[in-house]
Each structure stands twice: as C-alpha cells, then as structure tokens.
Length: 70
Image 1 (cartoon, rainbow, N blue to C red):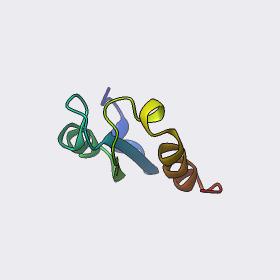
Image 2: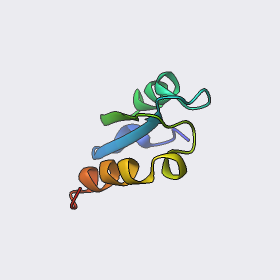
Image 3: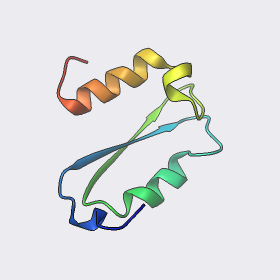
Image 4: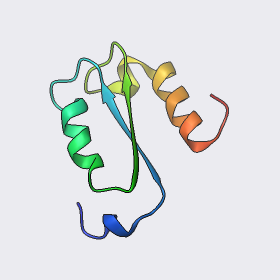
C-alpha cells in the first residue's frame, strides 16, 4: 500500500463516515500521514458505506475535490 506514495506530490482526498467503526477518522488519519497533501472529509450520518448511505453529500465532496460542480 505505501510503496512510493511518499513521492506523490499531488492532493489526496480521504473520506470517512461519521458513524464508521471500521474506517473512521482515526484510521484515515493513519493513512494520511503517508501523503504530502492529504485532506480528510468526514461525511455526516454515514458509516463505512458512504456512497450508499449519503450518496449526494459524498458525491458533492468528491466533485468539489476534483474541481467539478459540487
């Protein structure tokens, strides 16, 4: 997972569900430490399956990150 990521200089978006006990904020922050430009966004009222539980909010976050219409 981590081989070479320290050389990647672009922005990276991490998502976490507010209610996730599997991959919540704490776990995502561990992953973020390996990237130079990492950002974490927590999706309210979502667990591990963000795109199923809060599809509109999650897609707005991803589109905004990619520079598209939010």
